Image (tube, rainbow over all chains, first blue to last red):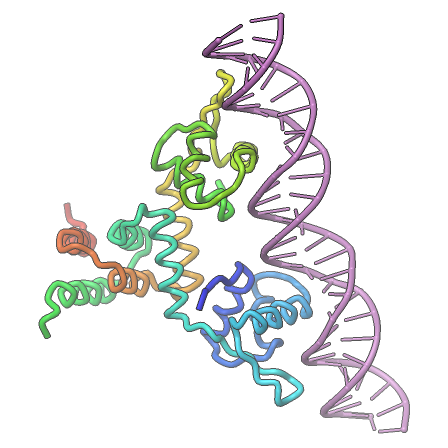
Length: 125
Length: 125
DNA sequence: TTTGATTTACGAAATTATTCGTAGACTAAG
DNA sequence: CTTAGTCTACGAATAATTTCGTAAATCAAA
């Protein structure tokens, strides 16, 4: 499936990924922490997302319950790919080093990455 | 400076980063390889980008010469940041591993990354 | 039952982004 | 000089995205 949420839609997906199933109000209150828009704006966006298949909704009760229909993992792959091609000249390694350089990663995180790299190098077991 | 190119603008920046200084025609022909839009469309976009300060242009000759006014490096930082927050729950390590997993990196690239990590761990010299 | 709050649906305004047509200036070739 | 081609400027059409107002249904409390 083609993943092409707009900016606003991505903000909503983010919340759904984090919180799981949500009502429009749940999402709206979370959004309201950072930006300011009306309730019906959020509602409309989520309705559109349902049409597009970006979210699923359970309409058995009056208050509909939404959840993401695209996995965060797929979205990650998609955006990474796009970004590597768009701004990193196609080099994943380039992106990785930029990412590590600018975000203070904990020692534990760095260790995890190194182990991961070893495993990539040596996929025997 | 705030970096906020649109999709189309990013495509153009990409070309400018790669080729350095370009005329509108240079950019347009490159764009034409992948999409199909009129020459004046590209022209207009680049004019808008000049207004916004995304590109600089030399207008001494009839045929103007454009170059990127935002560095690729800054754009990389900007988009990485955005992406880490938007789809990777704020974890750079998470992004790094996803990136390494999906893009076949050469052994040399992986080595380079490991060295980079060691250096991060041990910033003594 | 009545009132007030909450919900969905929906149309449409407002904003932002993209595309293109046309006009006028310049250039190079004949 | 004339013609054909290329360039910029610019306005405006089109398309995509975001925002919101209003109406109708449902619900819960008094």
